[in-house]
Image 1 (tube, rainbow, N blue to C red):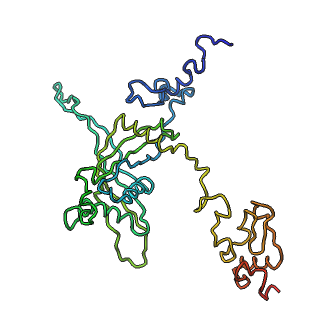
Image 2 (image 1 turned 60 degrees about the vertical axis):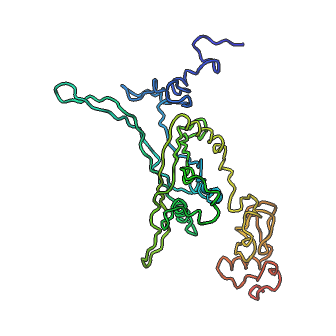
Image 3 (image 1 turned 120 degrees about the vertical axis):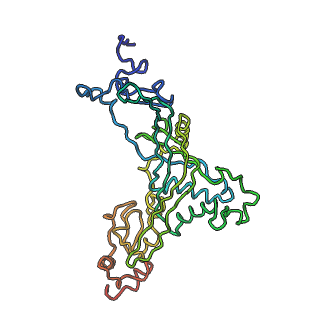
Length: 360
């Protein structure tokens, strides 16, 4: 067994002197005990009398990726409408192109008193405040005008413009099930997680909660008459909100990230196409496999099957492995490429009989 001299790096038996010059674990007294790995700013400063290349790791700039939005609660007035609750979660978590107005700041207010005879003012701290958030989500409108209609229904379920009361009792399903008209009845709350570049749950930068979120303004529906003009529509929905930000909101973010397991999703293995299959017989749409689909043999690679009188050599071969069975079938393919459909048989089953006279 080898011994290690005093002062030398001992692996797991002691802290690495290289790590201590770059990153530190759980800096005591710096905010939360959940702070995690932070730069050792005491040793990595680069803007003194000259650059310190050997301490460069600790000066690595932090990259903020887009936050991860998670719907925590949905309006309880929709307990009899689970599809609305599902739509709300999907819209906010996976459909919103942008969610802005969720950032906030801290400021320390002061009170000034005169000091001395030259007019200077001395500031004394009085109150620390957190700025108001004004969340806004932007969506691309979908078939059926569903974005606009959904948020319009949300507003009407809170208060209909023609009655100044909720539209839900008039539906006849909420008389006995209508919750008390408190904040949780008509609003949602969301958790916003700021991951670090590794995406690991224990390394998130921070997390905060915005509650009392409900739509205040959804913009115009987009009616117009302008000849020669058609356009897609975007919906920008403005919400109200109250932000909560402390050590426990970060702890909640860590636990939710572990539950979601986003760091375990490997998109290198994402399934191709609309069918979610790596089997060519399944992945290729059925009507593209036959002659009517217009898919010629060069694009019909993979698997041991025939098309238009062609057959594959072996299984899972490339298009280069497909050889024509006869010259007549090759003429059919040449006609397909040239856009001439007169030579195409009526169906694959009739490809070998009743050929066009042009092939005789």
